[in-house]
Length: 408
Image 1 (cartoon, rainbow, N blue to C red):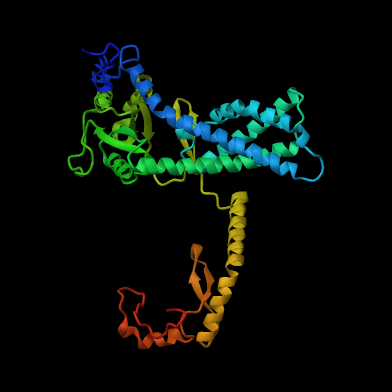
Image 2: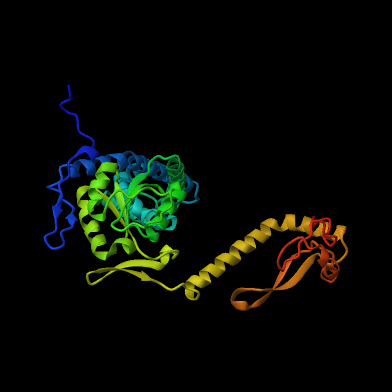
């Protein structure tokens, strides 16, 4: 006997369609016409709920650890003793935890599309932590509880550190799970042109992205397609039916393949029946920080910013490069001293080899490295050309007599 509470699979739910009176094409049913829409949306939310709950719990643990470490560090400072006010700090920290969670959610830290990029996630973490610490200060002021300002500052610093580390650990765990086929979103690709096939190949080659392509829907698929790609399972007008039949939780619309009218219709109607929609533009290989989405009348426009080679960003990059390079040289100095001594002992001549090289924008610069050949190596090259073992302009010889003992 069938259980009275048995719910049919999502793929078995009948989905009515309606026809456009102007074009005759099939349109998506409205939410009140689709009996499976609410069920499908609820199932997708239920799948994501345990992961989001785990991330939220990890965030709370990271924040609590940051508060405790900050209090310990502040108590070691000379001056005012805050150990007597420990209960005030504990109360403010405990009562503010829901505020932390709410502000983290407000800044989009539990939405996958907001934190896909590490840098974007870090910026949101900094903003959310700053707002949360400000809320703690306001709470302490309203409740007339004495908390040290140094503790608040240290809590901000430590929370940014602990939450960022915790988020990176979770990101790596999720990446491993996705590579094993878990926590992936099954999607349909809407379109049948080379851009759609290239997108599918990218998703199949990198499972850490979290997508599993179950098939294509296309009105005019290419006649010659790779056998490794999933099949075409219907037309663009049958997108919802195919999604229900395959259990796909989302679609990726390739605008260059279906056109703006169809992409607009799918983007408006599919989310209303529980299908996640992502739209792929024609742009490729452009850094995300150069793109800004904005409205231009009725149009959604991607504003592409020029690569900044001057101004404060260029100056900051130069300062970063010099700082990192200088630090690396200091750390590597003992090893470099040993190498220099070995070069000097095993071969007569200078320790360093200098040569002019062609650099950025065609400018020459002097390259310096530890010498690994005899001082007159370039003059000896003419006598060894006949022994060249490589094709092209570069000279390669397995037992090159010009190479020193250190170079070998």
